[in-house]
Every structure is written in C-alpha cells, then in structure tokens.
Image (cartoon, rainbow, N blue to C red; front, side, top):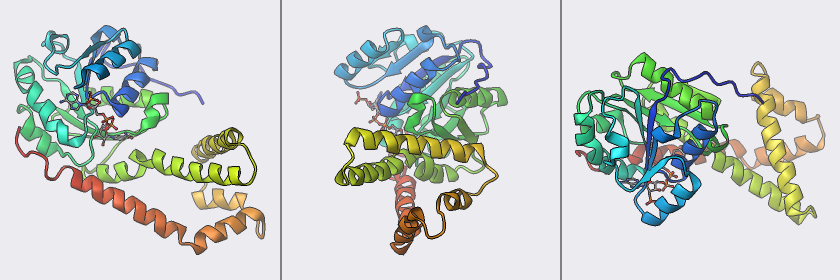
Length: 298
Ligand SMILES: NC(=O)c1ccc[n+]([C@@H]2O[C@H](COP(=O)([O-])OP(=O)(O)OC[C@H]3O[C@@H](n4cnc5c(N)ncnc54)[C@H](OP(=O)(O)O)[C@@H]3O)[C@@H](O)[C@H]2O)c1
C-alpha cells in the first residue's frame, strides 16, 4: 500500500528523543526512513546506559546520541523555533527527564513542544514538571511505527499552536497511517489499551495459530508466513471497505454450516468477546494507574 506523506510545515525541525528504548528507536527508525527528509544532524537520541548509547550510535551513525538530556547538541540552538522533544521513557522516569531539561527550556527563546508517549501521565502532571508556557502533546502510538504502519492517538494542551499540532500530526502520519486527535484526554488510556497494546494481542493470537498449525503438521516457518500474511491481508481489506461492518466481513468468511463457522461457534461458546473485553479492561485499569504514585512535583 502506498502511504502518502505531506511534507513537514517546518523545513527542518530539530528532534530530540529522550529515552530511546523499544518505542523511541521505532520512532527514530520510522521517521528517518519516512519521506519527510529530516536532517539527521538535527536529531538527538538520549538514553541512560553507556553500552546502550554505543549500540544506538552504531545503528544511527548520522544522529547525535548522548547520555545527557542537557547535551549542547540538543540545546545550543535555543532560538530554534521548531524543536520537538519526545519523552519516551517508562512513565516513572518522565519527571526525571522533565527535571533535567527544566532550566534548558526556561532559557530557550521559544520552548520546544514536549511530546510524551506514556499512558497515565497527564497534561496537568507534565505542566507541573515543566516551565510555565511549555506546549505539550500526549501521544499514544504502537510498535508498528518501526515499519511506518503504526496507529497513534494524539491529545494537545491548549498552548500547542495549530501549526505545531499539524507538524506533529504529519510526523506521526509519516510513521503511522492512522494518526488521530482524540477529543478527551482520558480517552488516551483507552487508545493505549486498544491500539497501543494491539500488536501484543495480535501476536498472541498468531502465536496460538502457529503452534496449532505446527501440532497439525505444518512447519513453523510456513505456518508463520501464512498466519502473518493473513493478518496483514485481513487488516488491509478491512481498511479498504470501511462501509462494511467487521461482523459482515467475518460472516463473508463463514459459509453457513461450513468449517469457519464451526470454529467461530467454538470461540463464541467459550465466551470469546467476554475474554477480549476483560483483557482490554485490565490493560485500561493498568494504564489509568500508571501515572498515579509517580512524583507529583519536579
Ligand atoms: N513498547 C510499546 O509497544 C509501547 C506502545 C505505546 C507506548 N509505549 C510507552 O512508551 C514508553 C517507553 O516504552 P518502551 O517499551 O520503549 O520502554 P523501554 O524499551 O524501557 O525504553 C525506555 C528507555 O528510556 C531510557 N531512559 C530511562 N530513563 C532515562 C533518562 N532519565 N534519560 C534518558 N533516557 C532514559 C532507558 O535507557 P537505558 O536503556 O539506557 O536504561 C530506556 O532505553 C512507555 O511509557 C510505554 O508505556 C510503549
């Protein structure tokens, strides 16, 4: 599928990814591979461990990698009007990054837009940890951003200008064809429980399917190939025909009295929908709890 990308509104934004672990690396990989033509010399990645920094530098030789969130490579151009600071640490470390960059942001002529990717940490908490006037966007992507196929929810604070939000939307659109602004902040926790965790749900189902196929005589690699392509194809088809309900798409595969219908009957008899709802609700509760108990003031 061709994924159309509109160029960034800023010709060459400065990007900092603080906490470049699994998701941060996914965003860096996706953005650098995207058609946005970002300038690698204006991108900095930060982590805590020296060995991690070394391996990141090997993987991304053209960008700056540092252990210091106050590094001059990030903050020298304090008049840069287009600095976007992604904080991609675990929730319990976000306030530490905010404390690290507090005085740098205060000294900047134009504050960067701070973008978080953490469930549970609210705009109110972030406003408390950052200098007054810092524009903040909460986002919730998922790991397929690594192959520019993510799904992302966004929620901006009132201080984010339309141009800044548009630029951030375009960056996320470059790595996630579905990048939507959410009407209420609390719904981001639902987005986290649905699309943030979705890759794990799908992999779990795929793993069960491959294990079953193996037990029935297919080789693992053949089964994985068939299951993976079925997953990609089903998603692509569902996106192609938004006018068709998911129930109708399912029913189209289930010939009455046929084999797929028999499989569906087994899932329904075992309360498939109830189990899915319980699993997602457990994820939602964990997302809501994530911001509680972290430090209240930077
Ligand atoms: N993974 C997902 O599918 C997913 C999806 C949506 C949202 N999220 C959210 O994204 C966030 C990151 O998740 P993740 O899976 O990418 O976690 P992760 O792999 O543990 O990455 C976090 C990174 O933060 C770095 N870090 C910690 N404290 C730091 C500090 N003070 N300064 C600079 N770097 C620091 C760590 O560096 P070291 O390795 O050097 O210690 C680590 O690499 C979480 O809030 C998670 O909820 C994740």
